[in-house]
Amino acid sequence: MMREVVMECRNLWKIYGDIIAVKDVSLQIREGEIKIIFGPSGSGKTTLLRCLGLLTKPTKGEIFLRGECLTRPGIKLNKYRARIGFVFQHIWLFHHLTALQNVELGLRRVLKLPKEEARRRAMQALREVRMERWAKHYPAQLSGGQQQRVGIARALAMDPEIILLDEPTSALDPELTGEVIDTLRDLAKEGRTMLIASHEMGFAREVADEMIFLDEGTIIERGPPEHFFTNPRTERARRFMARLIKQTMRER
Ligand SMILES: Nc1ncnc2c1ncn2[C@@H]1O[C@H](COP(=O)(O)OP(=O)(O)OP(=O)(O)O)[C@@H](O)[C@H]1O
Ligand SMILES: [Mg+2]
Image (cartoon, rainbow, N blue to C red; front, side):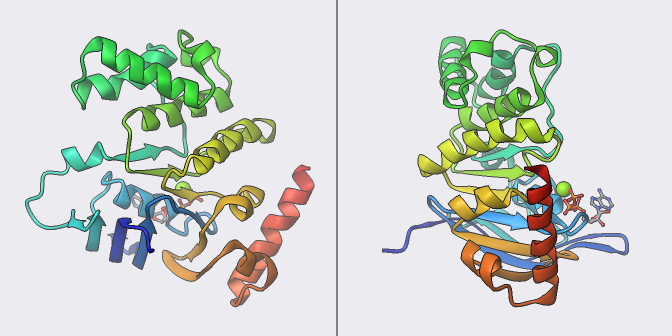
């Protein structure tokens, strides 16, 4: 049986002046699916994710969450935002708050949970990313990888129906990407629904149901990981894959 579509966009566009950041993108993510978006710098990955996360208003096109259209005029987006988790490319945490307080914030402010309940859920989320030992630490006392895991815990704590992750390891030194990838691998095993912008090809090959190659704002090619690893159809995808694989070899 086909699983339910959690999130979908149809013919999505985002235009900034004379820059077309997202050009006619359509995609669907079903319950428990993991899709990886990849493509060169400036290809529109962040913009696409920000549109889907309701952080940026698309210029044209439709976004659906469980069949409900979120781009119709007059819709109040706040309650839908709480159902979509977002992990940022450039890690941001409040520096004057501990890891635990950072994770609690949305639970208190957005979900309006009572203090004890918020604390319990925040600790549970920190446990899921194996960060409960660092609950009382401030961001400055954590490594980049640990900070990003707190960022992931913050998204998880809200119990979102889908998590959008924008290059969660790109701001990290290569030796720190591994721990974040391990966390994502755990989430994949739990069956979380995720759309991830990432160039971690080993990870993509292992967990992705579909890989989506974006260039100049538009989907050039898509398919299961094996398709891209063995036989990309377009010259652009072939060249980009070759570059990524070479880069991975160098980092090893
Ligand atoms: N707020 C904005 N105002 C104007 N142009 C923007 C804005 N945000 C993005 N752009 C432009 O849209 C295009 C896509 O940018 P985007 O950040 O989505 O790419 P990306 O694939 O995430 O790149 P990277 O791999 O470097 O993170 C770029 O040309 C960028 O300059
Ligand atoms: Mg980006």
